[in-house]
Length: 178
Image (cartoon, rainbow, N blue to C red; front, top):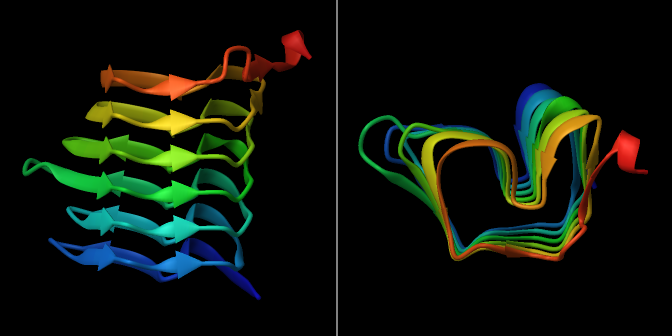
């Protein structure tokens, strides 16, 4: 099947807020939209995503992720934990990631992995397209990451902690490398 929406599109929920928990979910559908589009959740605010798997391809203009398009944590330390993405991610304008398109403010991505390929014009990463004051721990990615600029095997643009994350050497390329 296919799920389509302009924004906040997800295979399980479009948007979750305030301590919501989404766990043990699997999405096999293709998800398309304009922004904040994810295989499990399009937009998460101060919420937890645990043990979720996305197998569908995800396509949007921006803020596009295999698990969550965008996660904004707030001040209490919210987590994306034990999640897996195998679908390909296309984020035409940017912020495309295998797990999350963008994570902001006290979001901790732990023990997640991505095998899907990522295309993001800018800010593309195998785990997170971009992140700010958040952390990536114990993650790995085997997918290719392509884009115009600011792409990375783990994250395209990151201001936070990245620890014990693994990737395949040479998996991220800008257009000038292709």
